[in-house]
Image 1: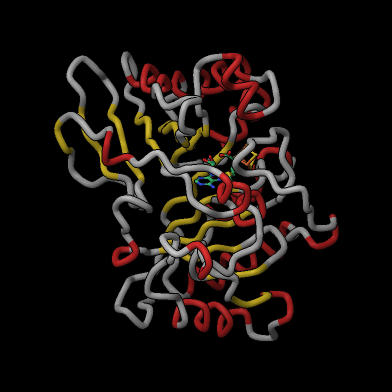
Image 2 (image 1 turned 90 degrees about the horizontal axis):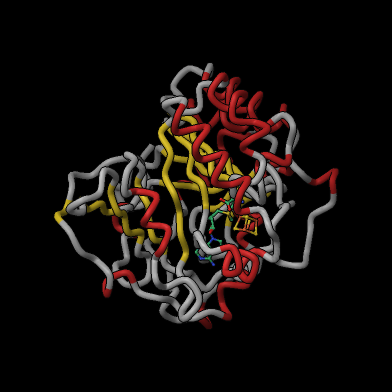
Length: 302
Ligand code: SAM
Ligand code: SF4
């Protein structure tokens, strides 16, 4: 379905929990919604089914850490069977991939984004507060060796991981490593954005995937490098997405707190239409005082 600016909205990000087993310093907010407020399996399937009737074709399962839910693969498998849904993808910190990799590929997950900001153990501990990098790397290997499409997401923090060392994962494997600019949402407000524009190099590749990433090939690398640049290269005019938070709030833009509390709505389909039709023209990250979203990224799902 088209929004009021003519953009085709065919992608929904679904945060299935706000809980996480890492504590990335730019993400995790101290606040948690209560257990009973987290969307249930049935609610997620119902909302996604109604969204599919309105033209949502691609769904991203995110969080918090989605693999903390033991029904994550079950959710993906059921979503894959809904008429109209073309792709179901997952974003994870990778810590539990060793345990769930098989369930993920059995469920038919179309691709997995693994968020990993550094390959250095100390830096990883500094950013996430945890010592789990070995599990993440093993999980990536398992998915890749099984033929699952794996992409790495890295957020750069000035003076901490801006050597972009995760790019090494694209050296010998057909993996895309994407650098995402820090956005002033949640704890991200307290960090300076490292702009991607300073790092772009290589030969630009054709558009791939459902998102705003711009990809380049690099000489000597089997994989590619991608840039997601909401700050230095605003892509709102091409935005195709809506977001469902872990407690069932459907919103049109990361930047604002506007949207609908789906559970309070009698007609879910009408509520989704309302969110699509009132989707803001663009974010206002450049004017931090105008940002109204108070939720953390772990609730919203990135
Ligand atoms: N736990 C999962 C993970 O880390 O992939 C899924 C949820 S996490 C909120 C999704 C993505 O949002 C991660 O790639 C994370 O790095 C990114 N993220 C979190 N806070 C951010 C911020 N302030 N600006 C940009 N990206 C952010
Ligand atoms: Fe957890 Fe992902 Fe946020 Fe890190 S970015 S704290 S892994 S939700």
